[in-house]
Amino acid sequence: MMQLFDTHTHFDVADFDHDRQHLAVQAKQVGVEALVLIGFIESRFDELIQTHQQLQHWENVPQSYLAPGLHPFYIEQHQQAHLQRLEQVLKQHDCVALGEIGLDTFLKQHKQPELFAKQQHYFNAQLELATHYQKPVLLHIRKAHAEALAILKAQKFKLGGIAHAFSGGVEEAKALIKLGFKIGVTGQITNPNAKKLHQVVQAIGAEYLVIETDCPDMTPLCCQTSTEHRTRNTPVNLPYVLDSLAQTLGHSQDQLAEQLWQNSLAALRLQ
Image (cartoon, rainbow, N blue to C red; front, side, top):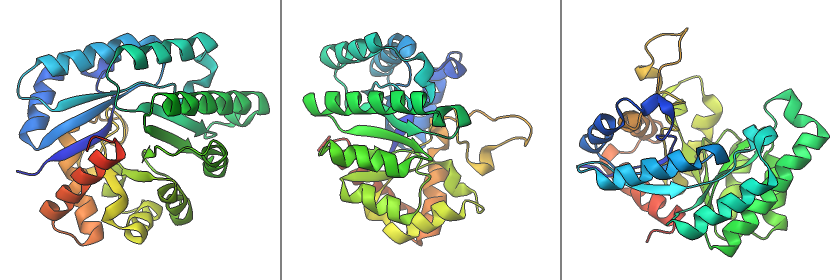
């Protein structure tokens, strides 16, 4: 049986409150041996930790890892006190990484100098925490690759991690790999129109990749039930990501799964 690592989930959110245990058992049955629970906002840290503890308590479910962080998309809601709370969580719980953190100018309002400066402040502060507690980071970068790379270089950040749901080009992927990061591939790879992503994975090869669902978002094309409504993504769908990635790279699924598993352990410093 293949071992798969879902390196990026929001399995703690309310979308899963009614069937989380059932889905966790199903995920393990299809080969998902481990998953990371990713933070994005301070007000949900308690639920994040609670879900982590549930998964550790249940039987026949994937191994759970915790990665708290303050996501750039929710920058308006972050407060200085939230950084202190984040540090408290890092001290009190066994966290594998900080995430998801980074820069995001997808929305026009986030390009405003004041808000973008606030994003940069929180990104810098969290990289400092990661360095202090010797943790890798899970990056969220959208339409801000040059700025994010500049901050990582200025901080001389050495612990690497994963560039999650990677949306940049080949050069940006190579720049992140040079800084010690693996590139996270989501259900987007199942979309033949995601040409940029297909180019990136072919250019860099299996050695630097990890896979993720980013559930409940990024549902693989084959699992979407309608075009009008968002279909909830779950960790059970991770094999579809593997399948499409294997096709894109021309690798056997078994061989690729083994490489991705090793890459995930390396990126999260679990070896």
